[in-house]
Image 1 (spheres, rainbow, N blue to C red):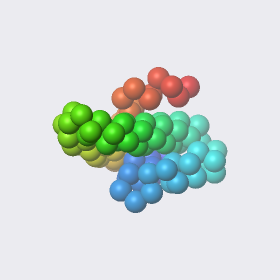
Image 2: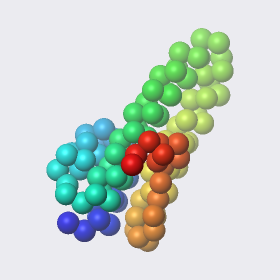
Image 3: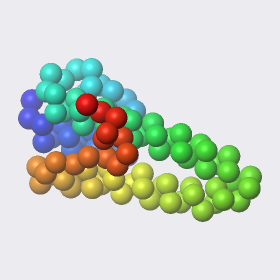
Length: 102
């Protein structure tokens, strides 16, 4: 399987199935590069979900009202950047979680 369409689908899964699609690619593909990208995307989505939950709780002390839109922008920006980089066949790493994947 070619890595380019797989990476585009993995990064684009943010908009329709952010947990299931990277998990399927992690389990079903033989390509190490695609597995690495799927793992990064999955960790990024899980991390953003946890951060959004914390920001929702922090709405009780009003700081969450500032954090939630910022997290939303981050959750949209990096997958879109990943799609763009995959189209151009350039390497892309999600912030923070790329060091967790080896």
